[in-house]
Amino acid sequence: MRRLSSRPAHARSRGAAVLALAGALSLAALGAPSSTAATPSSGTAGPDRAERAGVADRAVVHVSRGGGVRFATFNASLNRNAAGDLARDLASGEDPQIRNAAETLQRLRPDVVLVNEFDYAPGTADAFRRNYLEVGQRGARPLRLPYRYVAPVNTGVASGLDLDNDGAVGGGNDAYGFGLFPGQYGMVVYSRYPIDVRGARTFQHFLWKDMPGALLPDNPATEAPADWYSPAELERVRLSSKSHWDLPVRIGRRTVHFLVSHPTPPSFDGPEDRNGRRNHDEIRFWADYVGGERRSRYIYDDRGRRGGLRSGERFVIAGDQNADPVDGDSVAAAITQLLDHPRITDPRPRSAGAAEAAAQGGANASHRGDPSLDTADFSDVPGPGNLRVDYVLPSRRLPVLGAGVFWPRAADPLARLTGVFPFPTSDHRAVWLDVRVR
Image 1 (cartoon, rainbow, N blue to C red):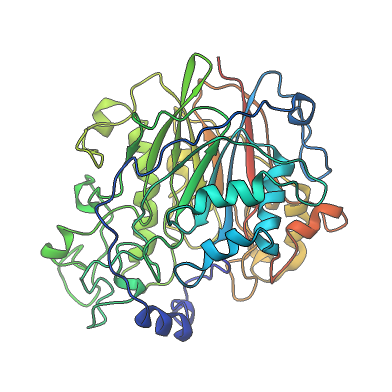
Image 2 (cartoon, rainbow, N blue to C red):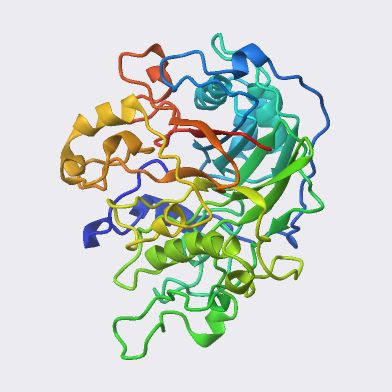
């Protein structure tokens, strides 16, 4: 999201204007969601090997792929305030912010990429590719990723419940995931390689209560534990604020599972910390999913299939996790569930631009983390400041060839794509990873 705030009492609300708009918009649920709501598109596009060997600018670490595959994640802020607005902007081919998002990806040349905060609606995924990615932006070469996956998400889908306990039902805070309309803040995956749609798994409907030891929020006004939601509400409250997807990507004779999600920001709540706790458990979901049969046996997908990923499978976990290892407002150890996982490698991607941006001051002055690892430029006053919240994390079976964050120094010509507030593209930076698939 554009400006993620910290959670002191005066900063927990998204603002009166947003809440008023939320109440005015219809949050009627989508039709019956499908875990395979979209199929890979047809098309052929041979990669430009000279260009794919590295990104031709000073903003990104230069590496020789050596036959590697580039995975990336980018919270591109391609969300709008009303249903249909993104489709309109995508149709024009001229929207400046969308052009910047496309150019960022064209500079990175990913083979497989997750785009977070992309409003879900029929046709939008193809319109972004056709009208922007496949059109060269400001000297960058077109990017052809012929396969894509998109499916419904929980954001903006009305629950019919008073989930924020304010005495009224309706608005973004009472949706299954915060959103002003169904599909806002959705996500899409594009790939140079075929996506096994029939083998894809989605977990949009997985119930939070069904995670053993879940950090369910507690009503501080009562003595009972974990009672923010009533028993009836717990029978319907979903874990994922958007969705969790396991997308098998076929790369030659190998399959790499692209595990993607976008946990809720640990903000905009109260002392019950329902968003912070949900963020922790949304991240935990993947830690359990790749943690072996015993650890993942409680999991079920939207088609009723149980269990997680089999041991020995190759995977890459990607997304805006909204959690920094040491700074910010997430529950302690939320993201370290992945960073310290015995089956996951943390490539610790860096950028010179992030290190430079730490001089913005404010909350950044008290941060304990390495600023060169930051991936998002959030509010400095009152905070939380710049944080590492976007991740591309491979399984240990995938050797890492290189990794980085697209955050140019201010003097770099490509800094026009990142900038400072109000951002020309997004407050998040694209993160990339090169691995050898063997």
